[in-house]
Amino acid sequence: MSASVTRRTVLAGGAGAAIGLALPGSAANAGGHHSTSVRFTLDARTLDGGEQVTSVTLDTGRLGPIDPAGLTPGTFSVHAKATSPIPIAPGDLIFSEYDLDRTVTAARLDRRGNIVLELSHAEGQPGGGTLGYILSRGRNVQLDLVYTITQNTPLVRRNGSPLTITRFVQGRLSNPEVDAFSHHVSGSGMKYRLYSPERSPHLGRRPLILWLHGGGEGASLPDDYYDNETTLRANRGALGFATPEAQRIFSGAYVVAPQSTSYWMEDGPRFAPLIREIVQDLVRRKRVDPDRIYVVGCSNGGYMSMEMTVAYPDLFAASVPICGVVEPLGGDGPPLITDAELAGIRTPTWLVTSRDDDTVPPETNTIHAHDLIPGSLMSLYDRVVWDGYQFPGHWSWIYVARNDPSLNGTYIWQWMARRRR
Image: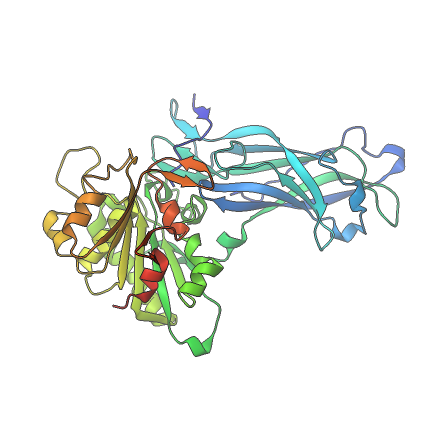
């Protein structure tokens, strides 16, 4: 029998259109109150520790003006169930399926007259995540989410009788930052997501930032789970470069996030030309400046960012490997990138890691690479803390996603944006 436990430090770093039905309790049809059916949306945000459902929006705008004074956190109850989209083998672990009540912290009306139920959420808080981490596969999957809404008291309308909703129909998972990235498949079959900057003809060609995900966001055969979603939901690595701040610094940049069909480290030299194919296709089809292509990757993707600069020394204007892997993690076998290859890298490189990384040891990986890559820069943190919350030491990509690394007064995004091939 499979075991489910709460995710805490394992997430390396959606929901389908499930139907959630709920009949109100004592309020149902009481006193002849009007009854109706309402759809709802799951509103999600990608936090530094992964995506969470942070609120639920009920499509009540069409039901007439609702008196906001009658809305309280107790007007509705919310129950959430999250299960794996693929079978979990007997004895395997998945972090984190759940079946629990979500705490409603506030109920309000948005400008369209829809009711928004704010849900308790925070870094490390269980019960709101959209991803599950399968331990044996070492990767994330997008959980099947089923939300059940129950109305506890009638809604007061300014013009009309009290309102009781008798059926709630679950709609889509909405995350504006993730939804801003379009879905694509390359000619070789590699899936990727693409953020395109706002059109501005006077700016000419734009930079391209290539984000290479960690091991937890790739696919893992033989189950053929290949979703093109977890790369944007497990952490803010790619999303950070699509924020207004980053877009201002880069004067509008494309951001592309390919998804590996397994692990970059499993066969980096084979994946390298498949990634380059995506980059070259975007240069041909979009207004991409070939002299301002930047590669950034974390962990497994940190290895791949270095591998790309080894394989294609003239392709990138800058490289940012984050807690990248150089030596085999098991300690056996040849290095993934040899000392000679590291010493031959000519792409301007800024490496980032944390001293307390117990997944990819800094000394034999990032620090070793920094010692060999000519002219490379390095940010070495003591631990990974953001907004007062301490994350696992391996998650140093959080700092890059927030433009935190700096040297001599220059921050890493600005440093990247100034580099030309």
